[in-house]
Image (cartoon, rainbow, N blue to C red):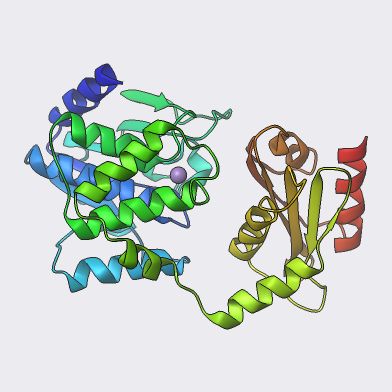
Length: 324
Ligand SMILES: [Mn+2]
């Protein structure tokens, strides 16, 4: 990976300003990676910003941002309107933890800033952001943070303990607590963050949730069932709306149970809109299954949104597809 590190740094050095962005619904892996790159950009004496709007969906991300503030760690964030005021010909956009334009909170960002670099750890999809100075997609990496830890380490840079904690939490989320996509390199990256002062108690508190939310999820999990020998399904009752994040959490949780190799969580997210979140331990390609429903994603992580079918029909359709 050393040659990539050299290339990344070389490209960063060519620009005066660096804008970092993660994917929409920014999670702690994407934010942690941005913060790590921020450190590098700062070290290279660049003007650096993290693209971020105010409407952050994930509680853990909101908490992490609050924690930065509380610890007086000053990070410059930038919003849509402000990007236009940059000297764009001297600006480099670094896209982290995604490689498709439609995964960006603000997709036009890649058109607005012509000079860009894409680094991701998800399985490569079609519609990769094009015309980049560098594209590096390595699905062997557990997380974006894992890349960034080695990148910083290669240049002997470390981050503030609060940032190390955020990064460690991001890695834990992406690996489902070191259960998936985890290699010895992942543990080593975790150890490096620990050496930088990442705090496990603070990490836990970033992930804490309301007990009511937890109980509600358990009640939903109680109703889940196997749709064949190795796939589980959980359906949110039609009398309530759910959100996509909850569906993702449920689908992920289902993978922790006996015999489950792939999982589906589905429910109405609004009137006449059914969302499905699907996860796999890795052997079953759930992207293929979601593709058949008009959705997409990655082999082990995919989703679909359906507007022309009732929840029950969607359920039947999934069962038909997987048992075909
Ligand atoms: Mn990630």
